[in-house]
Amino acid sequence: MYAREIDGQEFTFGVSGKLIRNVLVMYDRQTNSLWSQLLGEAVQGDMIGTKLEFLPAWMTTWEAWQALHPDTLALDKGGRRGSRDVYDSYYASSEAGVIGETFADDRLETKQFVVGVEIGGTAVAYPFSILNDKPVVNDNITGQPVLVVFDADSAAGVTYSRQVDGQTLTFLTAGAPRTITDAETGSTWDIFSGEAIAGPLTGHSLERLKSTVVFWFGWKDFHPDTAVYGIAPSDE
Image (cartoon, rainbow, N blue to C red; front, side):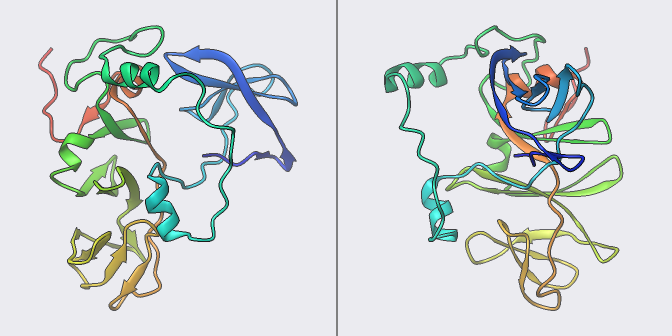
């Protein structure tokens, strides 16, 4: 999710009908520049090189979202187009999108979902298959202490900085659902809001870091040098 304001001007976007490495390309109605959905950056036109401001969001189920936000509004686009069989067969297949993969990489299955994170030019993919068994990951990317948390029930993955007021925290699973605790202060944190809800750090919030839930084939085609958490680099 991105903000639509650029240098004080509000932009509106549409679907261009184009793809770059199987990822949607948007256009803005003000300059007709083309923008990569995954990068959040203009790749052609007057705005080329301009980046959109990242807004924290996550992919989850309607049930989980409604439980957190019972008064939420929902955008109704009139339902899914096409038959369910077409969608189900696509997601069940090993096809790498519409135009096929750009780079071959068999470290993960083609349509394995990953939480993709890119910091300072270094990309890391956190596979759902690993997060299912290890839903709290304390990591470091180019010197940035990173926390990846995963809720298997809603298939939601969220990424935060582990630094709070200059202190680097180490996180563990907690007893209550969708909560974690830090080893340094024993505070309890809500994984979706990133807010400490009990303990010495109550009221403090973790900083959200940009991440995306994406198919493996889409992530590695944009980031061919990506690391995969829990999987050693190939010798090739």
